[in-house]
Amino acid sequence: MSDPMRIRAQAAGDKVTVRVLMSHEMETGQRKDAAGKVIPAWFIQEVTATHNGKTVLTADWGPSIAKNPFLQFVVKGGKVGDKVAVTWTDNKGGKRTDEATVS
Amino acid sequence: MQTRREMLARSATVAGLLAGAGFLPLSAMAAWPQAAFDSKNMADAVKALGGGAPVESKDVSVSGPDIAENGAVVPVGCATTLPGVKRLLLLVEKNPSVLAAVFNVTDAVEANLNTRVKMGQSSNVFAVAMMNDGKVFFAAKEIKVTLGGCGG
Amino acid sequence: MVKPSLIGLAALALCAGAQAQKSTADGIAEYRKMLEDGNPAELYEAKGEALWKQKRGPKNASLEQCDLGQGPGVVKGVFVTLPRYFADTQKVQDLESRLVSCMAMLQGFDAAEVAKTPFGRGEMANVTALATWIASVSRGMRFNLPQSHPAERQSYEVGKRAFFFRAGSHDFSCATCHAEDGKRIRLQDLPNLTKNPGDGIGFAAWPAYRVSNGQMWGMQLRLNDCFRQQRFPYPGFGSEVTIALATYMGVNAKGAESIAPSIKR
Image (tube, rainbow over the protein chains, first blue to last red):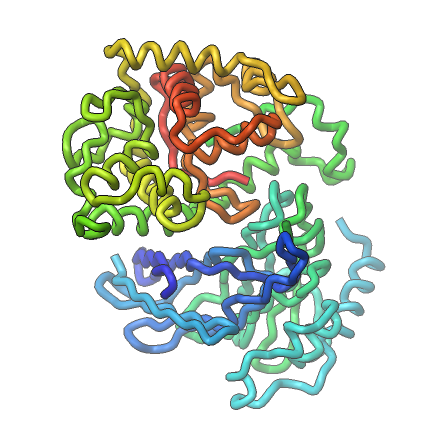
């Protein structure tokens, strides 16, 4: 059970700046543990963002994205009270969706 | 500051990288672009995604610090003011996994994304804008890393 | 905001001649500023806040009655007044060891077991998350540790002695690195901890999220790692020497603004 994302969505004019902090190891698969064994790759591959249920952004990520990933984007034509949801899926089939209300 | 020769050389490099079979059909775009992310160098990574010859453009920007205290977390952004952008890519030239992110931009968001990448060493970071009409533009920024952030 | 005071950095030649419009120090400051928004410590804050309110442990109770020095359940302002003396345990305690006391007293956890758990694992990870949240609630407030109880004053004096005590294979002490102005290791400033090093510096910056290992570090782990770097044996979690050192640094930092939890390299 993964930890929740922190999503902040702030309206200014008719634009909504969304900042997301995701909790994820983003393990590259390049590292070895103390015993010399490769630590398997484990990273977010796909991110989807919706605004009031409509998909506004999708992304494909690789292991070069930093641990506990940060993402910032700007939704056009949003306002206070709208819903923003972010979903991530990782290479092991892990998945998580969190939602925030625009303030 | 680049000389014209350097700029052309860089364009040629990125052109070679992006030369490919053209855009992927919509259905294929839903799958994670394995080949692109598996690539061992920037050339192969972008080739797998298709696109025309990339041209360095002031209308595309890659943002980030000049120097990162630790390569484990480097804030970078990719943006373009050009209308009709389909995708924005972020690449770290010297990383084992060169392609960091592919953003599929819709009209509902600004073509301006910010995220954080890991950098194994000082390297060029590229922002690539793939347009609806097939044109490809890019911008580059060198980010120095004082301590590599990929392992251990 | 930390503004590094780096002298003679030209020798490091990190920026090629023609491009050095911005000094390396400015570059690092800019990098740090870029990371302030969206500090992964927020993930731990959220976790800590949830743990405070959640009924857990053999007694199935929350921590909402925990007394961190200003009465049961009072969280705002406690971070900048710790370590301090607690009558019920009859000793000076820092935030993390006090949280373990509360987890034992209120929730029925085994304090010794928690103290033995490695950082980042099991209940110790929960202690770190709780400490991160509690620190965040006092962000912006200024340190004002009490020194009214004799045990608190003694803790300060013991901390001072420990700070200057040279030991280990390299004959290091905390003072070796932290008793002078203007010192640094590579690109990190070494604050002078024998006095108030300034807002958000030194004691006022921990707990902190360390990007280099992607870990959340409380002061107990920070001190543990200092001991490791000095080639000292590891201190026990919540041991008297770690609390005394925290008292010493905290009292010296009187008036400094807390920026915890912060983000570090």
